Image (cartoon, rainbow, N blue to C red; front, side):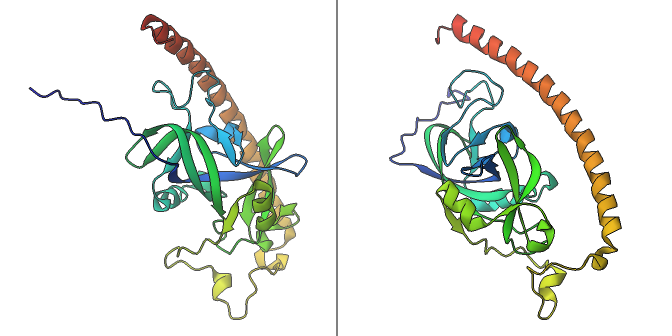
Length: 258
């Protein structure tokens, strides 16, 4: 009788594996280094162009662990990464092509792995749908790092910006055009005859500066409340991760895997 479950043969790749993923572009506080942060579990960790994975829960086991969800993640195809980018919480992310090496675990749609090299970056369209002309400071980030987002000149406003070419040079990677069609949707500005997508529009087109500032204040208040709730949730998750780490270490000790 055949066993219902069989261990798959261990893979021995002859070179790095290819992958595609989303990430938020990050800039160091002094503006001399570029990096990335994950869009899901890895939001609290900034990684460089060549980097090793660390457990997002603070555990000291090797990544990726069978008992944890730690490690880098990527998709096999860029189309799956683009589908993930449709989620509202992933707006402002960029598309990366990576080379995967080290320990890894294979899944149906992608890989979870320990080491990666970012090969190239593609700037997805601005939130308004217009082509990207800069990376603007979002006002968010982690200690020592500022989070950026791809924007057009109109949406950048008066915020500090960095050109995509400059960001790619700081990261030491190739900047590729994002020339994949987005379907039948077309921004109004792109359809207007003779419209300049990088021209700043007059405030009156949006009902005046007072209305814009009022919306910005309301949005900032909502963001502050959500940030506090996320911090509380993260603290609870960190405590659960610490308990899981202790239980995993104890299990490894009992089974003699140390």
